Length: 390
Image 1 (cartoon, rainbow, N blue to C red):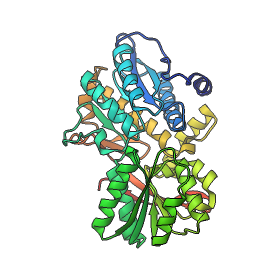
Image 2 (cartoon, rainbow, N blue to C red):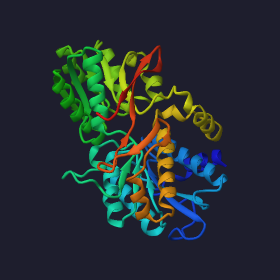
Image 3 (cartoon, one colour):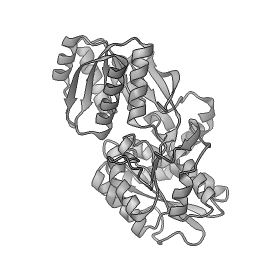
């Protein structure tokens, strides 16, 4: 059944919004608890969204086979946001107003999460973002926590501060050039966090070079960077830009070490960048070599015929976000959205893929560690674990 799900999705997700995978009864009456998912299920970002949906569906199937939550079966309703902010907001309204979900899981992108946040706050239905890392997802520009919005991932600030600290204190790097995507909430947020933290430590940013979303040639920016002879290049990008930029840099004779964040932990980076990323240092959400993850890996492989970490850590976020929601529903004692929201603010010690997860009621962000990773002999390797609550 689960293998069929992935095949059906591939054929059906060409629509701007997916037809819900379950019935369209409104509300959460009877023996069913409805939860929603919004994420990219088509387009360039499809692999991340599909990995999270697959893992959430696996969690739903497992919990239903064991009696459900509060004695009720869980029904998952999902929509494709096509990595588009407007589609994300529309999907959120549909989940709340038509499908009657009690909570929404996802998305994995900050811009989409921010677009969804106002809809969830207005309709008083909680959402728990998977790996939307921009601080503004849970706290608005005025410093006010968004009442119905939570997340299970670290923020850009935490990722940027962690890699800056490691580069300066552990690697002895003093001069860095930055290549980032103009217009990307993810890339811009990390650039800002890294720059602030690295310069406060005493480091120097030699240049900050930008590129547009659809750019495929970075040689002009990389030539400028090469002339400045940096110790390292910070590249907060997605895997396509990572592979293009690193290959082009090596072709130009640039031998500086690359620094990155969680988006680097992706099998496609190894496959397409090869030796260009050897020795690179980046942050990741968790140590995927931890034996505690073996059962999750095996279950996903059996269900879908592929490794859960093919797309890095993104699939594991699907597990974590479901377990946090499950704990909140059980703590609330019902599936009322406001009761679930209240319970989320008090969530602590939920067993996730990174160990225990607790949510800060003042920020709606989690307490969790960050892994420092490298590429060694063509494979990812964990270097150390840092406290993610900088």
